[in-house]
Each structure stands twice: as C-alpha cells, then as structure tokens.
Amino acid sequence: MQFTSAILLIAGLCTSVHSQGFADDCTDIYLLENWLVGTCPTSDGSGTITSSVYLPNKITNSEATLAEHIANYDGHLLSNLTGSVTSIPADSSWPIPSDFEVQLQVSSLNNNCSTIGGYLTLNDPQACYYLNLGVEYYWYAATTVNNLGWKIVAYHDSTCSGEAVGTFTPENVDTCLTFEDGVSGFAVIPLWNAD
Image (cartoon, rainbow, N blue to C red):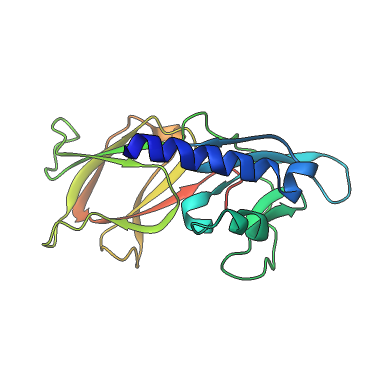
C-alpha cells in the first residue's frame, strides 16, 4: 500500500511539474530520489544551467505549492518557500549526480575503518545531521561510498558548531578518515547546483 501511494504521489508531482511555468522555460525536467531536476535558460539567454531542488525541504502536500514556490531564477531552479529569493548562487561546474544517495560508513573504534559499525545513507542537504542514539555517541573513523557530488563535513559536536575536523568529497571516496576526539555531527552539502 505504501509503495502504491508513493508511486501515485510521484505521478501527481510529475503531472504538476510539467504544468507549471518553469516547465515552459526549462527542459530535461525529471524527478529522481525526491529531487526535481531541470535545465533552464539564463536571464540574458546566453546559456543554460542544470540544477535541482530537494522537494521534501521545499514543498508541502499541496500540488499548487510546486507552482507557487519553485521557479527559474537566472537558470537556477530555486524555491521561495522560506522567503523571497534575494541572491542567486554562482553556477557550479559539478554535474548533477546520477544517484543522489551517498553512504557514510562509520566506526566507533579508531581502527582505520577495518570494522564498520554503522551505515548512514544520506540523500538530502542538511545543515547538521546527527544520529540520535539517546546517549552522547562519537564515531572515530569513517569513509564514504558512492559519493557522486556531496561535501560531508564532520564536527566533534552534534550541533555542527566549532571547527570542522574532517571533510568527505568525491575526491576522497573510499578513504578512511580518523578522528582522535570523535565526531557526532555532519553537515551534508551538495556540490552541484542545488536548492
């Protein structure tokens, strides 16, 4: 039943996406893993930009919200759900990933990742991701798998404040990072054009 509901929701969003104003301007519009992706012209008509919007952070359960809150801003698909768009991000040269999921493999032992104790699958931008186990908990080693476009910044504390103690990118995928004092919070940041 849940699978059928998910299919109907996605089908409804696809119909809604193609009936909106940005669909008239943008091409190659598709939904993948809760991300709306499209290639839109720049304001001056000099080119196009492929960008994405993570829908669960940007819309509510109303199909009308998609039309009201996502638009082409100088080639970027952006949402104004949290307020007026006041600045347009710089164009990233990083391509839209073919798979948005990245796996963060963590260990509570300082063991160069020889024994993994947890597998965290991430696919959405987050200012601070913290796995709440009910007690203060730290990871002492970690690596990423299938990182096709994320920057994951590790912090000692669960609020991601203070100094970053490690960073995972596609360039160091499958490389084990160790953290002498442990980490518990992770900022999850897309490297491609994303909102």
